[in-house]
Length: 121
Image (cartoon, rainbow, N blue to C red; front, top):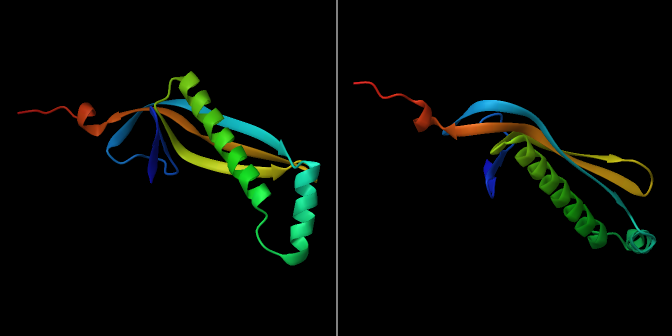
């Protein structure tokens, strides 16, 4: 599945159906580090007593994911890419209160396959 983020197509696969890779430009990376504030940790501890989803952390994780992806897209644009293939997300716990979210993929220049085919009579 490919998604279109403005002028950048992003896919988890190593190819985009209907397109061919003209040039590999390098790895596009977006990183953010988030900390869980004291208030959020307190609410999480209270909710953990009764169980259930901790919506404050879910919202924080979603914001961090989006920011890492946006930074990856900006990096790909700086490299001159119009697509990112083999897109991945990763996260690491840096401490009890800090998480690192990394979005990365291969920045490429693509063109529709029909442009690269020469029609001969």
